[in-house]
Image (cartoon, one colour):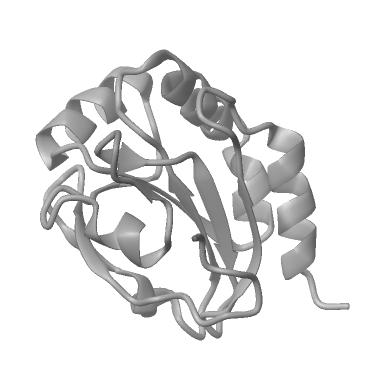
Length: 155
């Protein structure tokens, strides 16, 4: 079961597509984070989704939100995919232990061996403020990101 809104986001450290360690808590007190779990690099729906995020990166930057993609792919696969598609954001390898972070967030699909399409918007204090998950085979829409980003704005 996926983590619920208004709960503390589990901290983790994974390497990005360049082999650099990225720790969630490094953003604490500084900026919000959008964690975007996706099944597999180079797949059609995932490519379309992340290209749409790439094309709307200003939406996140304007809201002071760090966009981070996470999959069970290796850093090498993510590097090749990121270079091919021109992604200007971190892609993290939840490679080993296989899907460990996805499991912590409750979005790992054991029968498939990869994470579901799930997004968590985490505020600067480390609290999940908005989240959404689509059914298998269903792409997330940019409108869902816009709505989630609004949840991060102070009232």
